[in-house]
Every structure is written in C-alpha cells, then in structure tokens.
Length: 87
View 1 (spheres, one colour):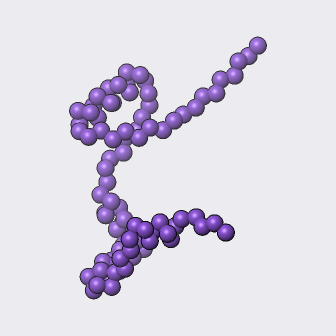
View 2 (cartoon, rainbow, N blue to C red):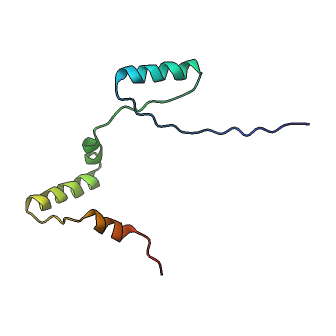
View 3 (cartoon, one colour):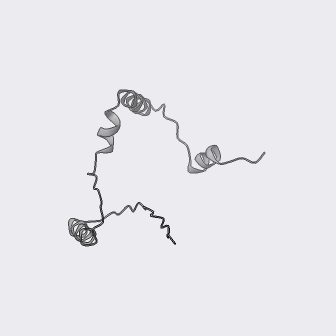
C-alpha cells in the first residue's frame, strides 16, 4: 500500500524590530534548514514616483491640496462607499 502525503507551503511574514531579532530569526531558520528570502525596505514615495503615471497623479493631488482644492472624507464615508449593499 502506497501512502500519499500532501506537502503544503505556508507564507509567514515576520517583522523584527531590530537587527538582533533579525539575526536570531535567521539563525533559527538556518538551523531548521528552512528556506527564506528577505526583502530590503524600500522608500514607498520613491517607489510610487518611479512610475510616470503615478507620479503625475501624485503631483496633481499635491497641487490640488496646496490650492485647498483637496477633498476631505471621513472614515465613515469610506466604509459607506466601499461596503456591500443589500439589494
């Protein structure tokens, strides 16, 4: 009789708060022979501005805000706009 085993992979996101924690986590994962990959922190503004279309939209929004033409919405407005509505 052949037994079938299902192998699953999970993704864990870990946020160490300092370099000591990061080092300890890496040592632990290495000891368990767990493969992992690390992504460097990126500057979100630089990342967004790297797209010409997004840079144009952000510049337009900043100009509107500087001219007091921005639209302020409340959190309740956001929930109302994006919540599912019953028919």
